Image (tube, rainbow, N blue to C red; front, top):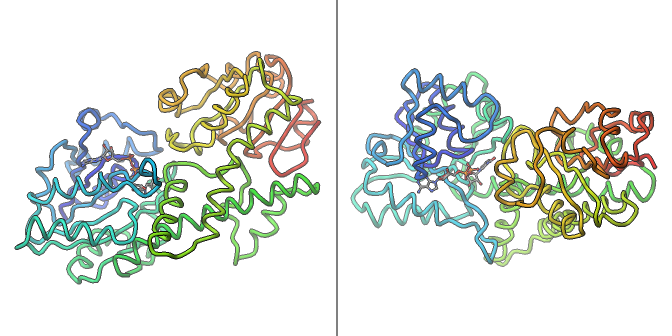
Length: 436
Ligand SMILES: NC(=O)c1ccc[n+]([C@@H]2O[C@H](COP(=O)([O-])OP(=O)(O)OC[C@H]3O[C@@H](n4cnc5c(N)ncnc54)[C@H](O)[C@@H]3O)[C@@H](O)[C@H]2O)c1
């Protein structure tokens, strides 16, 4: 099948490379000409494990191409839209301008029987508007519009794409349905459930999934706060509830609050949709508000660990990305944590294995270092903000020797209390009693 993917970002590039790997003939189109040139030179503009090899192999075999123009659209049976849908400045609605712009660009090129598939996360009813634009521009064509939301996680994107828990196909049109079934046919061996639903239902499934996961994280974060007050251990509570199959153990790790390119903007956009339809969504409202407050609360935790003030002190923040194995710092909790510490007078040093380039654009006055140990030099406290593998087994003796004070604030709970006692650190975890 000939496929064009509009947008070669985290989702478009991974989806395009995986579709090519399934055997389809894929062109990924991006309006960022620099990105396309880099891809054509074999350089991968994002950090995603396994992606460079997958892209190289499929380029070599001629199934994956990159272009800055939409010429490939005309011969494609399916055209996926995978452009960004960030929060709109000012009101928090999903900004759909990239989606509609892409649709207007491809409209004149589409074949008369093309299927346009929205993979971007878009509010309910966006598919109707895409359809309206296409019918307006191509009144004689029989172009179909379907929704196929994406559930991959950055850092495990290829595995998620090739072994999805489910594939959601939103269309009531038999031809569009057949095209999508053909595209995903290579996955049938793994037998993931394909959920055939209406376009609007598919659009809502994506927001409901993200809002639910954000709720789970926020729930355990509030339980963590209670644990700290009553002397309980949130990790044991998580295990104790997560082993119940009705609850499940995933997304029950207490931490600095959810971030990333999806949960914050998608919970906000869902609230906006709900408001537009006059439907109160108090749970999601609370989740969003609680998570927002948590950002600066994490800075206060660092202040408390340093006896009430960080003014003139040096704090080493380990991790800038919103989770490990990605270079994505969009809405990472490390960013407001650092700005809050700087507002309070701290000098912040930092190291992240993949996220420093992106972070530099947002945080100019941070001292960027080339290792965790270099960041910790002369620091009054080390704060673990992202649970990268390489932060899990730091040489504590070496760390302590180079620090001004032996203080670790572990916002990801990756160390054992006993270990910290032995190493004689003041240790402040989340939702557990630490070491004084
Ligand atoms: N990142 C994730 O983990 C993830 C997971 C599931 C769903 N999503 C959703 O997928 C969508 C894309 O997210 P992303 O993280 O890949 O975004 P991204 O910002 O990484 O990539 C978007 C790309 O689209 C390009 N683009 C924008 N307008 C274009 C146009 N008219 N023509 C060609 N290219 C254009 C941009 O240059 C950019 O490279 C969003 O709706 C997001 O919510 C993201």
